Length: 199
Image 1 (cartoon, helix red, strand yellow):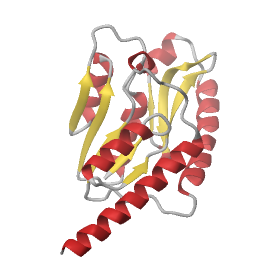
Image 2 (tube, helix red, strand yellow):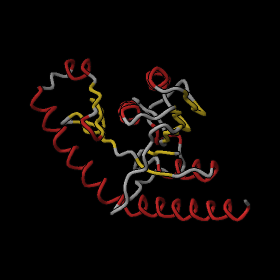
Image 3 (cartoon, rainbow, N blue to C red):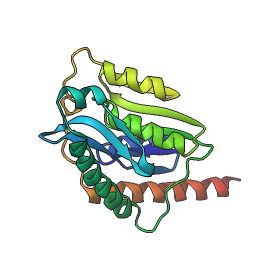
């Protein structure tokens, strides 16, 4: 199965799932941004209380535990909102005993991918393969330690941000996420029906 990190990972995950004829779902994780610089990750969280915190960064910037807790509360509420929105009434696809490809649009710090790996590991996946088009060498090294396998197509020496490696890096909307998931479900049903007829 393919699990992708929304929202930016959906276009990547969709194409991987299509090529592998595999079911697609999302693992909703949220970056924990530094309060006065939200784009800078001080960690990340996923469902089930899974979190990764960059204690060195938090200590170095003098971020208090109260500030960290406030950001965690805010992002936990956003995880809950997105879970309901993306899945509607459908249950999450269970990774138990399966090979899971975790896909995203790239790895900058690796925090959100690390928390996704831990979440899927907690759900007892048999094998976790991380697949991304581009990543920083530091992030790839962090992820490689926790995933069973890492596929990263480009690890440039000079890496500032994931977006610099895309011609089109516009924000993916919640509606587009739902549309990709629905398209993937229809594709899986069609492929399943074709396999049944072939037998």
